[in-house]
Image (cartoon, rainbow, N blue to C red):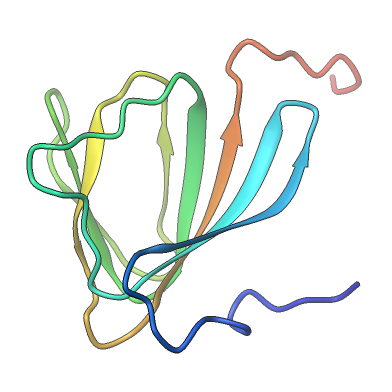
Length: 115
């Protein structure tokens, strides 16, 4: 069934919107919609899996606990967040939906069908 990443976004977003689009074989593809949402100060994402994320619309700033400078993301920008990299979203656009596409995958799963 055909869908569109920019459709069916709730009018009211009291919290960030997370939607799993596909999940199989240790990989999860997720749409995230932010509208001025941020990670609470003092909280960090600390994931045991790798995450590749692309920002499709809006804008966002990612901060890292140590080792990396803050990163401003604009539409089309993507970044690889390796497992264990403590990060947070410190800003998203308040006037437009920041639509993210995130691909989560276990760094220890090997795809034996690809060479």
